[in-house]
Image (cartoon, rainbow, N blue to C red; front, side, top):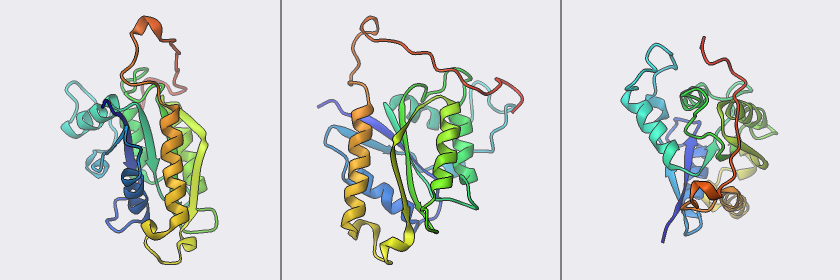
Length: 204
């Protein structure tokens, strides 16, 4: 059976992160025809610097871009740090936004979800992540959203919360529905769409 791939990026580096638990739920409950590739190395990426974004790129950068290239969609799961996107995740998005005009996620559907402290469950970070991704090239699916206040989990493991498992499973199912058929039909049969970045190609 041919399986489509969703690239999963996690905005928390903490081993015991609730968002990591949510990522594991997504992996465990993905449909049989969907493979979720959890790229769990964004903490190894150097800070984005155009001086080192050369050919060949650093090995870890090439690995991230290869994972994005081989995926048909993306799922970002992130907490909120000081009211916005965690720096490690923003850095990964910066690397994925290049090559300019030809991002490895260009035009691919991407959804953003996660959990955080506070009453809104990280919604500010999720909105900022969508904004950054939209400029970087993917097709952000705004209709797929899940911002979980961690206090609603009542200190239980995320996987033990039936409602959360159902919500995360639904997120993956809906994201899969946004993906093009895989393997794709011949190029001559597919419509094309031009995605333009709002960012200047240089001076980062």
